[in-house]
Amino acid sequence: MKFFVDTADTADIRELAATGLLDGVTTNPTLIHKSGRKFMEVVEEICGIVDGPVSAEVVALDHETMMKEAEILRKIADNVCIKVPLTIDGLKTCKALTDEGTLVNVTLCFSANQALLAAKAGASFISPFVGRHDDNGFDGLKLIEDIRLIYDNYQFDTEILAASLRHPIHVLECAKIGADVITAPPAVIKMLSKHVLTDKGLEGFAADWAKTGQTII
Ligand code: E4P
Image (cartoon, rainbow, N blue to C red; front, side, top):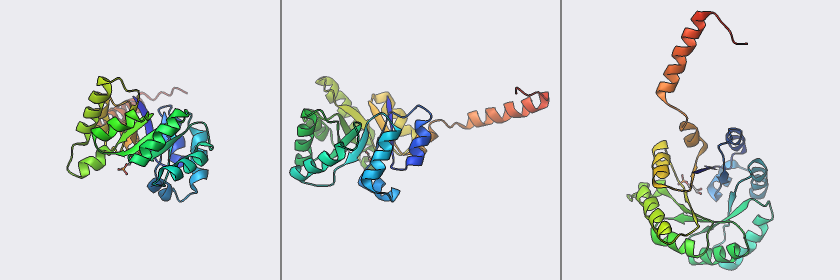
């Protein structure tokens, strides 16, 4: 399973990239706003930190303008992945871009039927939003399960990029279902390494090691 981080904070991206765990990055207009930085500049910096796909989202709602925005965004770097919304215009844009060999992430997916359309439009990634689905009284993980089943039924190549993940259980369940990729905030990815018994064990070893009076270096 690939790990993407969902942020435009380059300090966090550098820290995670140094672990070797990071396969890509997802951003969205809200995350760009949060960074307080210029969109193009921050995407260019991120593309220099990670080799994998870096999602940069178009903001237009119509196909023609989406194509113009995508044209500008894809020039930033070879690993830019154009993020388009799951609308008819977004799907049209997805088809045109993937036909030209550009990576496309279709975002704001909230139903398995929408995911089916994205796959038929040749999307490289489909982003079902698990957390936001849960927030609205639906079952976000069931959505991932349904999409996995449908994509496997027809051998679609589109990768399921489970998004809007809020906690480690979301990541664990997505791994069990067989999501191809997860994207989560830096804090959630870091939380995956934590366990109370690991901390307790370390404390015990440190205390006993001190009693030996030895050093390694
Ligand atoms: C995915 O690409 C989105 O940027 C993201 O996962 C949205 O997450 P949120 O619902 O926590 O804002």
